[in-house]
Amino acid sequence: MNESKIHNISRGSLFFVMFATLFHGFIYLIIKSPHGGASNPIASSVLEIILIFGVVLILFMSISLILKNIKMQRIGILLVAIIVLFDIASFLMTGMKLLGVVYEETIQKNATSASINTIQESIVKKASVDVACNGEANEYYDLGFGFTQEYKGTVAQGKEVNMTLSCDHTNLLVTGAVDQTIVVTSESGVKQELSRGGPHGAVLDTDYNFDGYNDILSLVSAGQGYEAVDSYYVFLYQPKTNKFLFNEQLSNLQNIVGADATKIEIYQSFNFFEMEDGEQVLKNQVVTHTWKGEELVKVREVKTKVESN
Image (cartoon, rainbow, N blue to C red; front, side, top):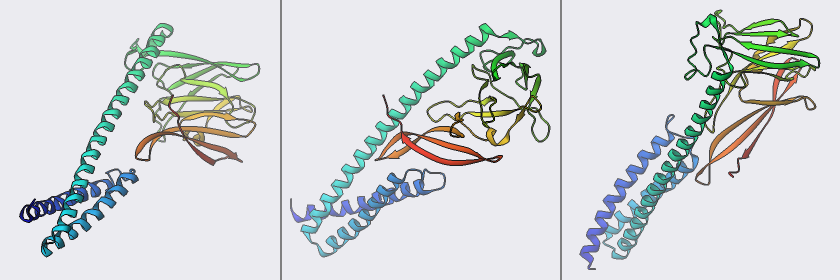
């Protein structure tokens, strides 16, 4: 190849590198913006390296053209070719990863949908229509709205109770060893929903303040997917009054998975995706709380990788 052709190719490559560097800089600004995913530090670091390399290559090729140094121009063209191959590989890998995420989300949605349908069918078969709600079941939409739902639990040995969730989900009627109608209201006095239904709308089998009596954990909202977050209302049993009392500290915790009376500890469990070696990895974080007097305090957080089957 004669020097004239090399010179022309080198000049064209210089313009390409300038355009590519501007493009990479634009992508870098998007990633680093407050709304653009600064949660991806690996991509940010790679782009920083590419930008520095691009600026250096622009200077190198500009000098080679000014000096008309054919050897430098050949090296510059080779480096440009490497950048082109790298960008093509990056786009292909990103496209494949996006396709994988979409496929994984589709599978998860189908599984969640099947689970919801099973719960709905169970509610329809077992629940009775509440006259107070005029029989408006809406069973295929609200997971049980229009139905009263009954749950059983044990406060302590010999103290069994039945819990009935009203069809509008604002009253939890407790009968048996405890006779109480539990109603949660906002600061303005508006009634709040206790549960959206399902097989675990109200559970009474765990002692959350470690006084020897089990307390009520009532589901408020349930999340979906790998990073699902569930919210609850917690009502602590008061032996002096034989009533359940709403506890704000415990109700502020999400994804409560249990309590250990021997260690005086309460556990939360969260799944989340985190970038590791350029890939999204599913991890689990267990957050532990304990009581210091009447105050609930965080003890530790332990993060582990979720191994796929």
